Length: 55
Image (cartoon, rainbow, N blue to C red; front, side):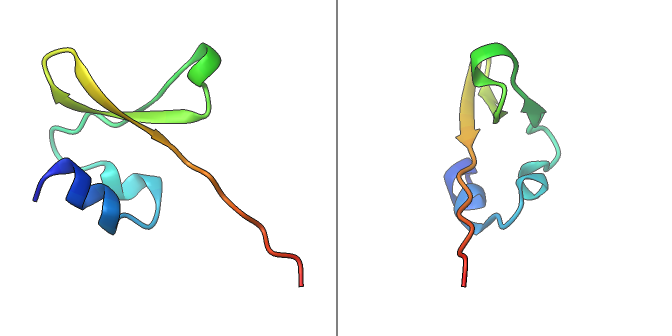
């Protein structure tokens, strides 16, 4: 399973914390984003958008 398949299947951010992913919260202007390692210095950045529906 590749990273994008895992991301598509994830329901919570910790679902991306698989062995070798090095899931981590970013800092500064990306402080609300998470990242996982692809290879070398490459990362996939995850920006979580939530919606609250008021009924």
